[in-house]
Length: 226
View 1 (tube, rainbow, N blue to C red):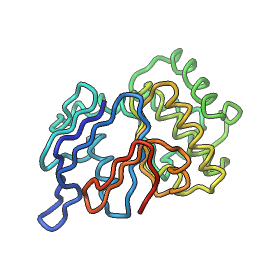
View 2: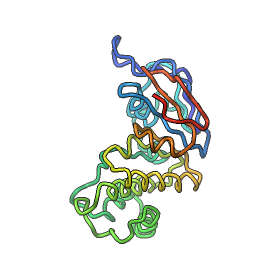
View 3: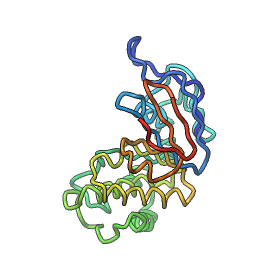
View 4: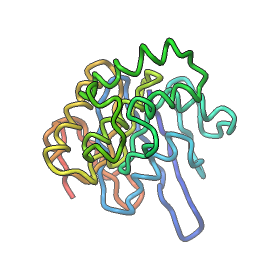
C-alpha cells in the first residue's frame, strides 16, 4: 500500500529532513509515526501526499510511483488519500453539511450523490444533528470530526492524520481515536502522526519512531518511547 525505499529529503545542504528512510505499510494497517519536533514526521506526510518531492529514493502509494508525480495528477492522488491536520481547515462561512459537500462539489460529483453521501459520513463521525451548524458553533473535537468526515468523501484507501489531536483535550482525543479505529475496521489504512503518547500507547498497534530524519525503531505492537 505504501512503500518508501531509501528516501532522502534535503531542503538545502544544511537541512536534511529525511535520510535513507525505508518504510513499508501494508493495506489495512494502523501505524503511528512518532518523534520529537524536527524528526521528519511532517516531511514524511508531505511526501505521501505529494506536497513535497524526494531528493532521492522512491515513494510508492498503491500502484502509483509518486516519486516524480506530475502536478496535474496530484488531485487524483489525493482522492485516494484522506488527510487530516491539527487545525481542521474548515470553511467558516459554510455549514457543516456544506463543508463536507464542498469537497465533493469541487470534484464534480452530482447533487444526488452529495445528498446521499454527506449525511452518511456525518453519521459515521457522530454529527448528523449538526448539519446546519457552523464551525464556530462546534467544539474543537466536533470540528475535527467534521474534518474527518470531509477526508472520507472519496472513500480513500489511506487516511493520513498529522497531529489530529494536537489542539484537543483528552476526552476529545479519545473520541477521535475511536473514530480512527472504526475507520480502520472498515479496511482503511491509517497513518497517524502524533505527539500524544497516551493515545499511541492505548492503540497497541505498530509504532514507527523517527529521530533526526531516520527510522530508529519500528515495533509491531509498540509504545511511544522517546
